[in-house]
Image (cartoon, rainbow over all chains, first blue to last red; front, side):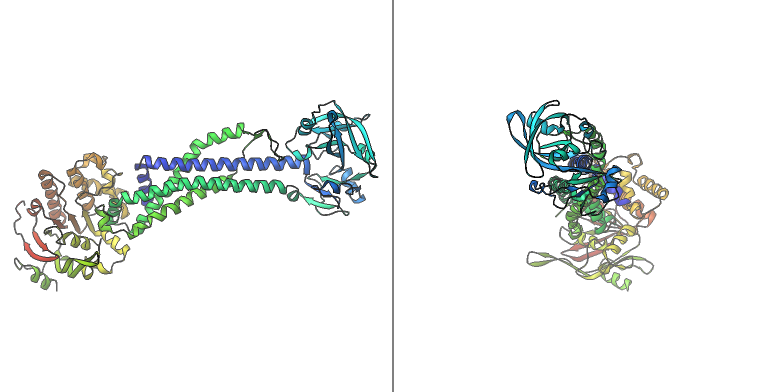
Length: 386
Length: 253
């Protein structure tokens, strides 16, 4: 308790040197919490939107289907097996059919994917109910697709596709709606059609390429020859990207931390040099060298404790404001799940990790120069000599 | 044994010391320091005893070994050969923890440059030694105020060392040394930074405490003003005891 009280008194008494260290450390702390908050916020949003718009709670794939190889689409379709029919009927499983096609906006040609979706499905957020209207072939596109093809709601455009026999067919379709999503993989280069319409167009009645599961669907393994893909598999690219960002975050944090710790180390080294007489006095008054080392280590560590407190004081309103207004993202299509504005999410574990890291590293960096006290000649120290 | 040693080093006169309680006994003590490639002998085969309540000065020119002897008695340094027994503790054999405990409980230090803790108030500086002893808060407060009363600084308890004069700082140092009522106070050139008036003030204070509390005071000094108050003067030269005299009636007492 005496050492704790003395260390706090000493660092408060040190004035500007203390506040400089506290400022640098608290800046590092707030930056770390903020940066991790943005990564966590983006990750949560990416997972949530991907689940809502694309993957559902899991998927069952046709064995031939490879989402990264469009050439597999020609064979990656089959009729809905009887074992899955119940789930399709009760709405916990929705079939998606995919085929390759070409669109001709303003006479230009662009390869696209034609995706059939049940207008009554409730699993994905795609507004498929807009495809329920009968009459001409209507389609939904995402805002990225609309921008790249310069199509608007109500426009008509020619599409061409191949049926199951490889025969080309073409038809003018109506753009029934344009939806906005942060998930580019259900938007860019894709045209969403009524599932039954696409089945008719391709001559693939009652067929699907894959099924999307709702949270209530009990199927969690391969079923009837269809391969089960869990949410971890389906969102692996998001995880890889956030892991990459965390490495980047760790590098930035390490640089900031190194600067802050250098300041602490410098202060400690200078302190031990300037306060030799004080060190000698502590020992003369009855402290053991070990206790004086502990005192100086605690002083260095106290910088980080004050920094965390200061960080909470000035960082809380700032981070709250970030959480409220978010961070505007540049309008570049990076083909990742990201909105116009990124909102941070401050996880307790992330904040605690930052605190523990800062405090522990400060303690270590304070201990290193303090060890010299044990080797100091007390008699010389009392006289202020080296 | 103590009598034998004392009688043979005391060159001035042989007194009857049989009733004296010795607090410090120095036996064939030698201290050498490495200087360049050779060794400098700061103390050479010194034998001394100090009785309870003595007001003794170690005098001699610079480099005579008086501060080294004081540091060894205060267990801030260790002998190269021989030993010093302080209150029954062998300085050569003490562990750092035991050594710190001995200083904390039994030895008060007064330094030439005061060595007050700059961020602490006068009260806190004096209180520090008691905090190390884990003295209960009420007893601590009482002891600190009493010590400040001895040195006449009760009105300065909230001041910081930077707000005090040199004389006041040294009085705080005396209060800090005395607050724990140690058996021994070691003062290294306590008046070197003070003017004549302040020197006499602090010496009178120390002499008063020496008489009232029976604390053994040992000074390392070559200040004539200090010598006027001493009851015993041990003269050192080149690390050896040149003369050991008892002063029956010190000039300023």
